[in-house]
Length: 157
Image (cartoon, rainbow, N blue to C red; front, top):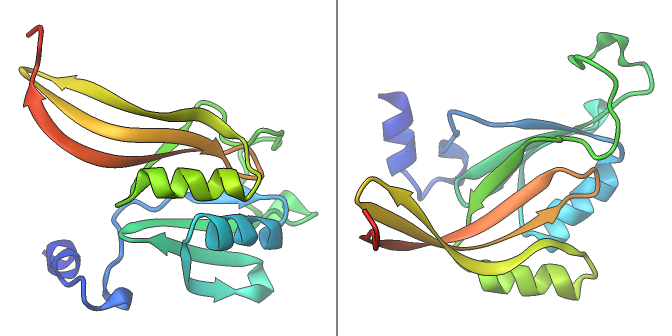
């Protein structure tokens, strides 16, 4: 259980590696880093400037971003990239303080895609609550930041 051992060791920042890490293709790595690091608060776990690549984390959420080279023949692109990138996909990222992050994004001049709200999602006879909002990164990837609020008995089972 390598993953379980690593997941339980939260005192070592380099020790945790998520089992699923999306890699996002971006047009401008520097612009994306300013957004993810300076506005959202992600830190760089790995950086390979020669590849225009960065591995980022926020708590135990991890993503990779890589600038698309002019010559895409050697990349893993399955088709032409057209803005907004990531159509049909939203990435849910759990944070401790959704409201504070929301306010920081707005203060930095970014438009929120879906406003901060409380939502309850059914799971059988229970509902899971979360405070959430959505924002698009500079390439159009949709990010849903949420704070878990707990569970309650579903009002209409």
